[in-house]
Image 1 (cartoon, rainbow, N blue to C red):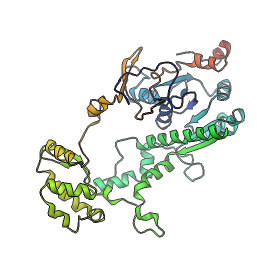
Image 2 (image 1 turned 90 degrees about the vertical axis):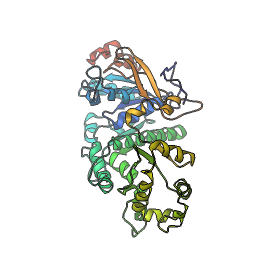
Image 3 (image 1 turned 135 degrees about the horizontal axis):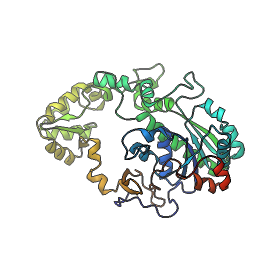
Image 4 (image 1 turned 45 degrees about the vertical axis):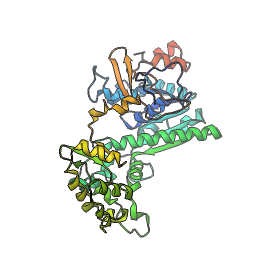
Length: 405
């Protein structure tokens, strides 16, 4: 990632997915986050929007109605085509577009897709090589299939508030739409894996990504612990993560985040505080002992942390190569010196709203760089130009009752 902070796509996309055409029928967050990643990687993402537009156009602040910052962040680099899929000719237009697309991705419930006549069976009949991605709340084979699913609901069902209650004293959701984003990331890698399989075999396929299953796998990764065995030898909870004492350490004048975890960290910390004899304490002598006595361990660390300022601790811990950093707000990230030096944020000039600031692609490719392809689209901005690319005449476009934004 270079330090050029402007988003300046030049010519055709250069990312690893350059040449891939994606028809995107997703809305809200999980799906648009997935397709935003695909766009940053070079795919041509064509977003199908209803006359009402994606609901995120109305969520949160924006300079103009229907153009919120949230919508902009999730949908930069895409082209917007307005189609009223209640109309038969609009559905027929989607089928025609699918003929030359590589990927079709949607976040519509299965019965509604069946009513629209846009199922995998229908679309693969016109394009056998198509990668068709279903983004669902729940897998269709289970008893929750078809239930509405939003981030809070999925966090609750996958144990997030329960674990937070153990750590903080009461159930609460994380201050992050984690279930949507983790599921969107999973959808992006699943689609890319299917594209790779298609490149090797020429065969398309249907891919299904469900929030509940995805978050269950995500949450249980570290928490399975002794439940991996049959019969289980412990409850499925990684105790270090949920101990109430695991939180930023209070210093003389603020807080510091530090992870004094392995034996090297622990030995160096005891040197910093002038207490090498603590290494012989049976409760803390190795990782299993420290995990078994994790509350007492964190309490001990906290007593030492109160003896110095945040700046003094950062200097001592960094010098000892113990992971440590100051506690930032999300606002602090906007001016973080490291992010500035690596060119993390990208600025793009919007013809109406002026300069826009986006988190850029957080990954680097030496030969096929990812980049923000263009600004966020107005509702239906590219309807006529995109449909004409797919061979629609002016008369056909006009008959659909839509126009270029």
